[in-house]
Amino acid sequence: MKISLEKLSDHYFSAMESYLSGGGEKALESAYEIGRRALDNRLGVLEMATLHHMALKRLLTRKSGAEGVAQNAGAIERFFVESLTPFEMTHRGFREANEALRVSEERYRELFENANDIVFMTDLKGNFISINKAGERLTGYQREETPGKNFADVVPAEYLGLARRMLEEKLANKIPTTYELEILTKDGRRLPLEVSTRIIFHEGEPTGIQGIARDITERRRAQDALRKSNEALEEQAKHIAHAIHDDAGQLLATVHIALEDTIREVLPRNRKPLEKIRGILYEIEEHLRQFSHELRPTVLDDLGLQAGLEFLASNVSKRTGVKVRFENSIDGRLPAPVETALYRISQEALTNISRHAKAKNAFLKLHANGKNISYSIRDDGVGFDAGAELSKRGQRGLGLVGIQMRLDAFGGEFSIKSAPEKGSELFITIPLER
Image 1 (cartoon, rainbow, N blue to C red):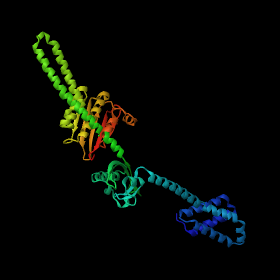
Image 2: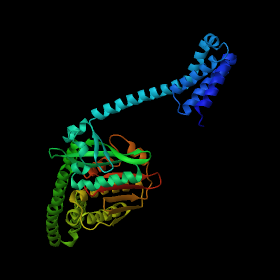
Image 3: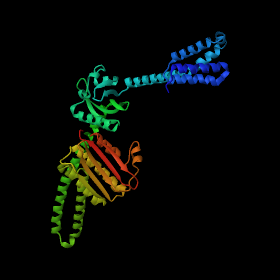
Image 4: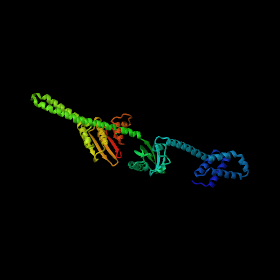
């Protein structure tokens, strides 16, 4: 409640007079309360000094005022000091807060300047406001050059759509986003980064972007050495599979012809052992064909992922009794490495389902939504504790490490939804930009 200086002066004088007349601690508390009310009304120490001066003046105008003031000088001083206590406490609080803020700012500045990752700020239009030393070192741009630059000046055209979508997602959902892109350094090199950004708000309104960007050159190199290792293994598997399918198949065909000729030449009563051998040859031929298809199905190379997964689903259903259904809404073929990765992941997942899930049905669903390739593998089995499985460090069960390693090559991710007796679902996304 607003109070005038004149009214507060009357309260101050009355309280001081009461204190000097033996009012004790209660009157002294009044001095504190007057100081607090003055502070609430945005009065300062100078105004409190004015109140005190006015009270002394009124005391001096009384009979034997000077003598009384002299005799009570100590008490008058204590009263004045008590009235200033709220100001002292507030000042101390500000001082401590400012000291904490200073320490915090120094710590932030130290982290900002000495971080190995790029730390930057932009406005909502993507204009750079600040960048740290790591940003200077990795991009080649000095910090005095960055305020005149926009995000679009350093991000290649093929990544601009991704960056804009991430901004829209942050603004819509008010949550941080993490994504990978490349930027162009000052000398024209492409630098791959993992970027984590969040919206800066002021009084509830978005005002800018704060981000941390990590150089993932070594990660990309490791991924490339891996997208290459896998391709080499697949080529080797393809060669062996074709050798088994073609060479071994032709050899068995030759043996079949020779065996048929021999069977015709012997008497009927002597044909039974030869017919038994013929049956064994058929079994060998079937096993070799099955092994060849599991190693590298020719249908995957010749006709693509849809035909490969339909073939895989059919074989698993026949071999295990789990009914596997496949649904695809993607027209045409995907890049060969993506088809291979999804086929191998399907093999691993269906093997787990047939061995551990005790499922009757499994469902494979593949589609694209304009931004991502989405693929899910679901079963109606006994399920498992997905959280516990995903929290394991080191070598995980269920082939999860291998799945993530295959997806890393394309910037893909996976998640698992499962619970005991509720079945399970493996959900995969691969960004189309990659």
